[in-house]
Image (cartoon, rainbow, N blue to C red):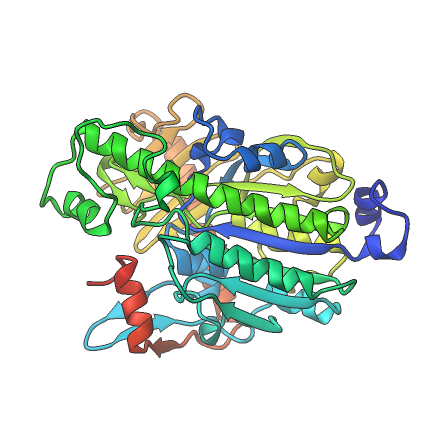
Length: 439
């Protein structure tokens, strides 16, 4: 509570300041390096850039997985993927999806127990309430309409503003899941070709076009990749406008001075880097995600310490004076909101059989990517030179730490009832198919 008082003393001296609202904004498939606060050279997100000036920007945040379901599960549970065990779907005669155990300490449950109104407003069915993601939420709303193209961002922001207008003085915890800029890369017309002139590529941004590059059915030219980047940027610019509308609504409703806002993503996206497309590898373009937090009374700052997306749960709980979950594995980053030290440590992510660990000093290993890989991100941020042969002792040290995280997380999973699978209905299967996850 002492830290919380320091954080919010500048905003207000009344009791209301001790119960800030919390909004966690997750933008599906948003690479950190395509936002201005992370050094992007194009002005694609002016509202994020302006907001981030007064936020604490974590420059090196890592998502715990390279696809949505386990990543969001880690965000909301504060645990590594092997601990929460909500990892994948199985495709056969039917499609079945992992679910979250009801025993886990979800961040929404902690806020709900503290008297908060809790709500989730989402644009994707892959994190459905009935598969455990609704735990702790008073309401869990899927906004119909477009999921990853067209006016998806507008639809979700409209629903979010309608929620805010009904809250009054009741403190709330709100989770928002945007689907821009997930493929297909097709923003509304005014943004569709905003960042590229005619360069000879005829790509429309359709999912099937990019899938052909992934499967080897077609070869991407430099012009194709340039165009895909531009279409992706157009989607970011479109979403940024609606993020701005959300901020404007907070200001108009008098909530800006009593609301913590977190901006992050579940994973990034590949456009041919390391031979990959979409998001199924553990290179930085897929797991380096934005993480920025604004809080009343907290000054803007930049933090270079490597952190993890699962740190969000303990961080927002501390900022609000809410009890932490018993089994949370994430680190509390709230000292950074009042100028304190940010705890350093290893960061870990996985995808299917692949696993990665990044040490606090910037050495990264990847296991299961067709052989052992190791990079020095300080000297080689593009992960172009495998140094396993010359750094064998360091690799062995990091591998041992990675295995320890993996095994301890598996042991943590034993504390909960077994993860179940749920057969998906036709609508959910179609949603997965439209997003390119299943055939």
